[in-house]
Length: 349
Image (cartoon, rainbow, N blue to C red; front, side):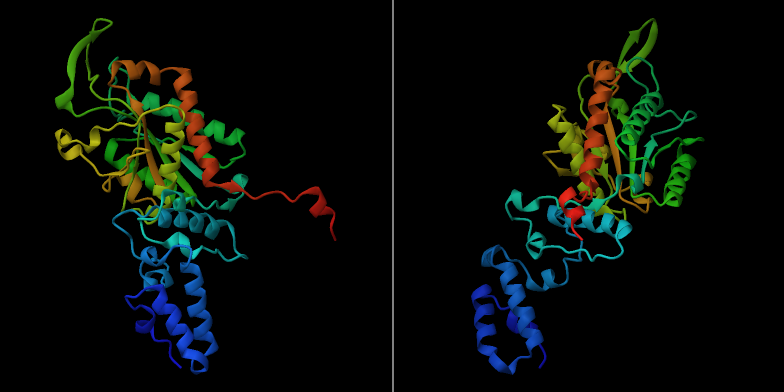
């Protein structure tokens, strides 16, 4: 007998479903009954009012959700890492984790993905190049020098923490060609993760003039803070978003504030969608290094170097250590090592 999807998806919710299962009796094949019962049990903890579309759950919520369902993002993270590093064990996702966005925040808990840090490939991209140095700080230092120094420290710390395949990407050439060059290198590396390191500035209309050590310069003390960026156009957007959230949470946990100006209309075409108001994750769909990379990709603006106070902080070893620790902690949470067997288990035949 064919399973009737229309009968399952009645507006009465779970009571109708339970009633249907009971009424079918022996006329329904064992296969259909098992499926219906399994779905009913999976939805019971959620509640009939929050169960969402049963059809969407059975399809694995394949469609991208414009509301950026965090649970789907976290499931995507586990799926990506497991697919690259596991061939023998299937990946299982709890049906309750695929529910609608109005579930309580506790329901969006990240499901860790088991992976081996020594085999986990992460590219740490140094934003801009020596030929195209990016923004100029309030004290006339090129952004590229800040990016290089911080990226080197992050890559080095990852290696000491067991991520021996962390790779520093330093690209040469002019601005636009270098963007496609670094994307090509990253895609050829078959990395599990791509992180581009930058430091922030402001649109020219916010700049003010001043002199530093006898040289004319520009500054803007109006805005400060870090920001984390992802692109909907990245083929691994949900996983990118999950990793970006991890970075934002670690930055926030260390007392750092994210830059909020990108939500303001005064930013003009620099205004962007804020995906997570707690962690400072923004969407920028046109960034080449985010939309053209084949792996999950995130861009971190570590702080503002056009703000005179924050520039001094970004130039300090203490702030670099804070940002480095936050990024490394996020990578560790993204790639949870497989637990080593205990001595007792190892002794068993």
